[in-house]
Image 1 (cartoon, rainbow, N blue to C red):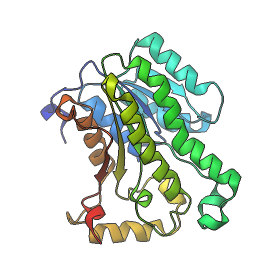
Image 2: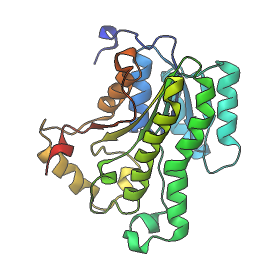
Image 3: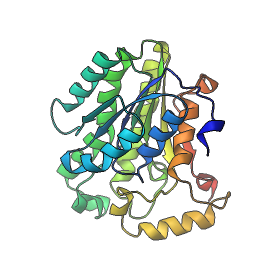
Image 4: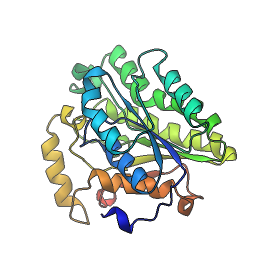
Length: 260
């Protein structure tokens, strides 16, 4: 989609995007859509190894803030929000697109998931969003929108999704409760549930290529979604056009979720 046909309806909005690993990341599609609609960006990267992949993307998007954020490292999350407060004084959009489970716990069945692996997956993939929301809410002085990335495996059993199913279910429930708690501040919260997208994170799932092929065949619209489909959905939900929508799990999957 050409940028010259898009109205800058997010002009003067400030967005924090967490979870870009490379140009194939869903978070990158969201950041790109926000930027095309006029928003200023703060972008984080996981660690020094990831920095080399993310910096060029942040530069292309004219990110005003570019910082490391590993939610398992004490103090990094606080440092990001301190920098946003110092640079901008406020925040309008928060996008959380991170998830992790140890490989041995992810690739085994739920029965074989260790307590430590389950706790790690829950902390990084779910509770970190709650922690971000707590820091973001006071900066959303004029209201705002928060997003967390989920998947249909939170609602229905998807073979090989394993421990991430219960974790994403908890994430979706957290979005609903945060929508309730933050609604009086005019802060809207959504779980976004994309169809299968070939990202680095998805490559950790066993037989993911089979899942992709099946999704393309079963989707009523007949196509797989891409990162920009997800990005423009989030961008729309951050605009005044969606001002009365909150607490929902929004499917961006070509209609796969309606199929039996």
